[in-house]
Length: 75
Image 1 (cartoon, rainbow, N blue to C red):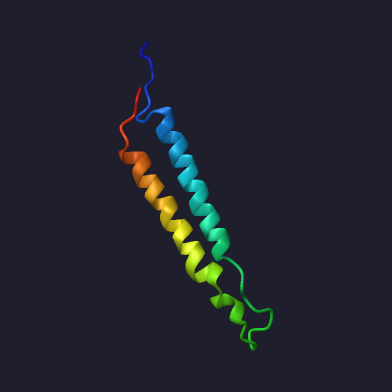
Image 2: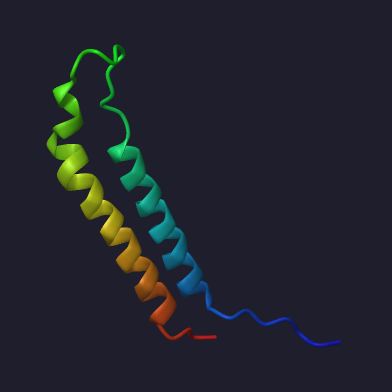
């Protein structure tokens, strides 16, 4: 019976989990801002949280994912 080995080490999987968490937080920050009445414009859709912070958090999560995949695992 062969011992099962994983492709990545523990550090890589922890970093990948943190990256996924950052991506999820970015999408949560981007949500909302809609109007209850489609005839009325809601300017909240263009606030700094949705236009600046959410994309930056998303990009940070994606960069962390790339780093987690490219980092050599210490098995």
